[in-house]
Image (cartoon, rainbow, N blue to C red; front, side):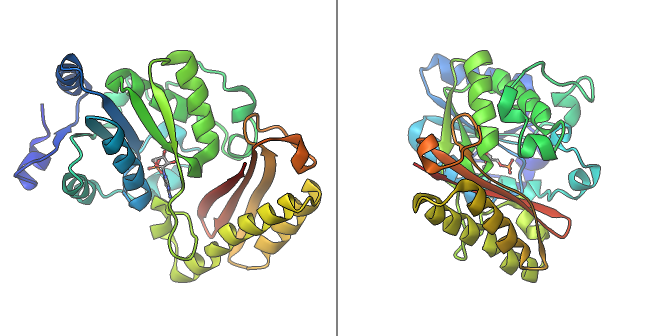
Length: 296
Ligand code: AMP
């Protein structure tokens, strides 16, 4: 039932580590019967402070917190990215033990997928068509599939997602509303380092120089936000931001979008939306970095 490798190497175990879904479901059922509220934080591991901010929120809101670690193959549209994705399950489990997370789920691909490329039949509409949807074909189909599977297994009261992946959050909010309406989807703010760089597992793949250069992403988002609030035309702000990011030869902006944060529809001026999303994807060498801010 428990993965003996993890159980033995981290004794005395504070968190139970599960590698199979049925034992995990059984354990959760016991808590549910006692009326305990369950919070769930799905991750792809290589945990950092951003993940722990979600876990802390779940611990505050619920009696039991479940954290999953699974590098989901179906959401990678680039096999090199999948192979190179940072993996450090032993350090992650240790850190989760230190944070006193109750249950850890570390499934294999076979445990999650009976058919390798199987994806959920779910139409996210506009949310999945632009920005990440456009630049990473198939990505959101993979995300929706795995999150739906996890929500079915864990059946939490609340599930926590970072605003850093804002489009993913919108997609999951829609998915849960349609397919898992008993789960409350909670959005959590982006955790950044002192220089403003949004924390990401992929940051550890950046050189020191690339990390320094990447701090321009948040500066550009913030400045663009000020320009929008000052009433500048959206088209003009986008053009400025793309140019500004490309000034550093270590960075290659893929997109810089300013859209309605609820519908992801284009806007021409700030008066066209109550909530505005400013989102960027930027390449530093092989690594793709995402960040955004939301103007209310
Ligand atoms: P990942 O392991 O990258 O798939 O992320 C797992 C969850 O943590 C997702 O809901 C992410 O949006 C969230 N997350 C990742 N980085 C951050 C961050 N810097 N701040 C807040 N949440 C984050």
